[in-house]
Structure formats: C-alpha cells, structure tokens
Image (cartoon, rainbow, N blue to C red):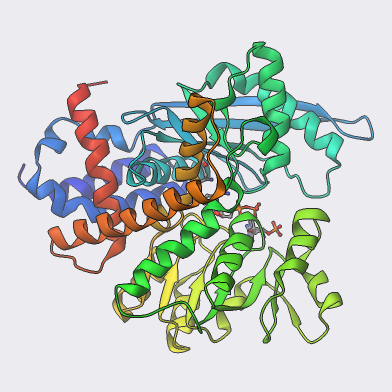
Amino acid sequence: MANAKQYCEELFQRVTERNAHEPEFHQAVKEVLESLVPVLEKRPEYISLGIMERIVEPERQIIFRVPWVDDTGKVRVNRGFRIQFNSAIGPYKGGIRFHPSVNVGILKFLGFEQTFKNSLTGLPIGGGKGGSDFDPKGKSDGEVMRFCQSFMTELYRHIGQDIDVPAGDIGVGGREVGYMFGQFKRIKNAYEAGVLTGKGLTFGGSLVRTQATGYGLVYFLDEMLKDKGMAIAGKTVLVSGSGNVSIYATEKVQQMGGKVVAVSDSNGYVYDAEGIKLDTVKRIKEIERGRISEYVKAHPKAEYHEGCSGIWTIKCDIALPCATQNEIDENSAKILVKNGCQAVAEGANMPTTLEGTKVFLDSGVLFGPAKAANAGGVATSALEMSQNSMRLSWTFEEVDAKLKNIMINIFKNSSKAAEDYGLKGNLVAGANMAGFLKVAEAMKAQGLV
Ligand code: NDP
Ligand code: 2IT
C-alpha cells in the first residue's frame, strides 16, 4: 500500500462525514488512526483486508425507547443504547452510562476505546458500551429501580454471558447493576450470573471490582513512575471527580504514601491542604449521594470553589483525571505543566483533549492514557466472569494480585510497542498499537465478517 498516512487521513475524513455531529467519536478515532500509521506501514495487509474500515464501524448499534413512571405518577421517556463495537476477541464487554449528556456519539467513542482497552488486558473480551440519557441525580430509589427494570426489559434480548456483558460507568454502580440483574433473571427465568459484572457480593460479584479501576490506575501510575526511578510516596496529587474511580484512586494513593489534596464533582472542587479525608467523601458520595461542597461542613479549614476545571490550577506533582471526557483542555494542561506536574494518569475515559495530550507529551510529562491506565476495572470484570463460569469466588488478595499483574503487563506491553515502532516513552501510541494488534490479528484470522 502506497501511503499509510494518506490512507488514514482519508479514512478519518470518511469517518467524520459518515458520523456527523459526533465530535467525541471523531476525537477517539483520530488519535488511534494517527498512532497506527507506523504499524500499517509495516503491515499493509491490514489495509487491503479492510481491517481499518471495519474497526471504526460498530458491528451493531441498538437504540430503544425506555418508558417509566416517576414518583408523582408522570410518564417519562428516555432513550436507551447499546453499541456492540467489536467481538473479534470475545463477547462485547463494557459499561452502561446513565447521564443526561449520553448520545450515540459519546457511546461510540466509549465503545471504540473499549475495544482496544479490553484487548490490552490480555483477557478474552470484545468492546461495547451502552447507556441512557436518564439522569439519576435527585431520583428516588424507586424511580431508579423502575427505570432500570424498563431499560433491561428491552436490553435483555441483546445481551448474555457469551454475547454481551454490560457493567457500570458514570451514574451506574452497584445499586443499578443489582436492579438490572434482578430484571434480567426474572425475564429469562435463568440464573446467568455472568451476564452483568459489578454485581453485589451476595449474588456473584467479585471482591475488588468496586475498587478495581481506581486501584488499577494507581498500580499503573506506580509502574510508570518506578520506570523513571520515582515513587508515589510523598507526592502531592489531584484527583478529579468523586465517584467510583476517584474514590478508590484516592484510597490507593493514600495507602502508598501520596497526599491527595483535591477532589471535585460537576459543580466544583474541594482543596484540603492537610489531605482529603476519604471517609467524608465516601459518606457524602456513596451513602448520602450528596454534593462535594458539603465536605467543608465537616472540615472547615478546607476550601470549596465553584467550577470543576479550577482543580487543575492547584500546584501538584501528579494529576489523575477521574471524572469525564475532555476535562483537561490545552489551557489546563499548560497550567499543570507550568506548576511542575510530573505525571498524569487517566482514570476517566478520554479526559484529556488531543491538544492537552500534545502539551503533556511535548513537555516530557509521564502520561498514562486511559485505555491502558483505567483498564483495571474491565479486567476485574473479566475476572468476575471467570469466577461466575467456575462457580467459585477468589479472595480479595487473589483478585488484587491478578489486577496488579495485569496493570504491570499493560505498562510493559504498551512501552514495548512504543519502543518497537521508534516511539520510546509514548504510551499513547504504544497502548493504541498494542491494543490494536491483537484485535487486528483475530479479525484477519476470522475472515471478512
Ligand atoms: P461515577 O458516576 O461514580 O462518578 C463520576 C464523577 O465524575 C462524579 O464525581 C461526577 O460528578 C463527575 N462527572 C461526571 N460527569 C461530569 C461532567 N460532565 N462534568 C464534570 N464532572 C462530571 O462514575 P465513575 O467514577 O464510574 O466514572 C468516572 C470516569 O471513569 C468516566 O469517564 C468513566 O467512563 C471512567 N471509567 C469508569 C470505570 C468503572 O469501572 N466505573 C472503568 C474505567 C473508566 P457529579 O456527581 O456532579 O455528576
Ligand atoms: O470504561 C470502562 O472500562 C468501564 N466502565 C468498565 C467496563 C466493564 O465492563 O467493567
């Protein structure tokens, strides 16, 4: 093939035309295609076999109506989605997001990223993502349950432990997974435990799954730092968000001797110079489902500021974006670099814009991209599926050791791929290449499907 770079540029152009009004999907595809040019120069058969055209096109996209009744008796209608992106290496696997911003473009970017991330884990899971524009904020437990039941009443026909295995993401945690599992079991009249992951520990859930994304992120960060003779102990850390990923990233940083001085939510951020008291954050977010502004009531010396991007103006050694996509733009990246930030590891999916990523890479900041750094969550989901198939449960220590090992391997494989293609130290390119190669080989072997 004459020119891999030109091929990728033309393919990207077609992707933007065929998927108009989906800027997040374009962003995710652009980064991957740019990274893969050196691979395609060496392996032109991936172009001639149509692997590239197929890898940017979801295998199946499902969109459905979700009607439910709120506590006042009013009928509400939301939209449900499942994007079954790629099943070359295993059943579709990926979370469900409930957030008012959810649309097909957001879920396509997430499903696309998930395909490469899941490949990087080394486990047999394909890529998928789903969700709804339902907003769980301010809803009663009864409303959330009725919504989840209605959502599953449509979704159940598309999923299964060997077909597609959803889990949590923004707005979907143990409560929602429990309600969805209950409805699935009732409709199917079968106990198919492996159809969803992130389940409660009393009905097939795995130890460590709750902590896995945050813990895995910090294990990855630790590898990245150790490779340069650095350590987490003694470092000042910013962790955006205050949900599942943020809370358990904070917990692991603290266990390893780092000092987390700020967390946030979509309204604002809290700065606690003495170090964030995680018990307070857990009470506010996991139990009361409240706002992070309430933190200062318990700790009056801490400061609360409106506006979530302000967190990146605080001086730090390490930044862990764990809230949502595009939360660090070029300007925030420049401020972080100017203030001496040495490492960034992405807990959220695509939290840094392409321009922001360039700032970090050009400045020599150690940068762990989401696909690699946050893969611990889905990896532990795959371990949950294994335990469900075996009808066994491993101990906390066993699962945690497997998670750590997986994160070390993801770091090694991403670093090696970058080095193999002359881009030593560029984990963005390395993760994209290593994740892609396994999927591409499987697609090649399976023929034109
Ligand atoms: P949660 O719903 O538990 O927490 C999300 C946090 O991010 C909340 O603090 C929320 O604030 C904040 N947030 C959400 N949307 C926005 C927004 N548009 N602007 C600013 N802040 C926002 O979700 P998770 O912790 O599970 O997910 C966080 C990120 O990690 C997502 O990008 C997700 O895709 C990714 N991820 C999650 C995994 C998992 O296992 N859960 C695995 C891998 C990645 P508020 O409460 O105000 O909305
Ligand atoms: O983005 C992600 O990797 C997740 N939300 C977790 C997916 C999963 O299937 O555990």
